[in-house]
Image (cartoon, rainbow, N blue to C red; front, side, top):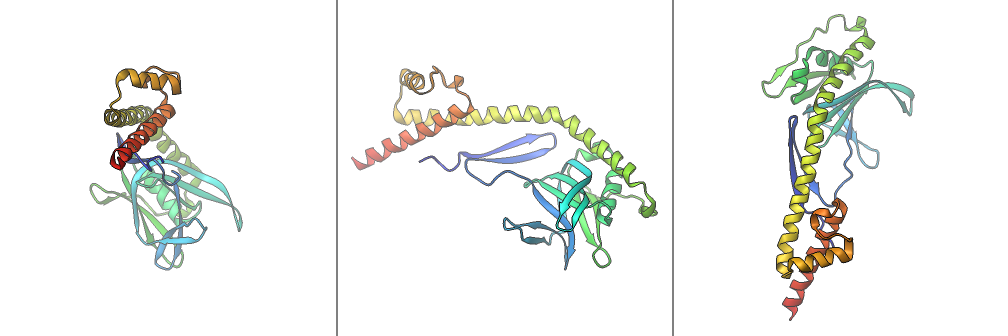
Length: 257
């Protein structure tokens, strides 16, 4: 019987920190947040059964990692066009709104007013209700509590396509500039995980009273390798589980005797 998890790994990078839980868990996929006013809620998510779950919080803080404008989406009402904003938060989210909606336009105008340097930092996406079914978007700097100021006048006459292109380009610049650091984080994360598994193996091999020669013999018989460092990630994880299980069995036998 393998342990359900090995622990929690905190990964730090230029754009924030993320806790990665090792072992069994939920599927790591982004949560869609749909902008739509229902009662006092301005957005909602979907349950696993497809039911709407109102989100009563008015703000979501995270790092903007991407945007997709004028995205065609097939719905029960036919083909529609959406704006998808990707946010890195404790649970990564994709905020989806109608392309022509007040929310989408105020979101794009706010993003257009930000510099690339500002876009690298955490931002707060806030919703506020307007008349009837209208929802507006405001962006705040969570460090200073200041709202991003932009001109709303003449929003009906804006060149939406040009605005979308400017914002998409700006966000893509931020993503491309952070790609290399994120690759380094991935390598660092893998190194930390392997180091943690090595420490677990050392701990339980000590309980088993294995000599280095016994360890090499076991690796040769089961993995055709002579050193733990030669094991790939899958093999190292398997060896970790095996050692833990053998140590548990030995402990149980010693208690029983």
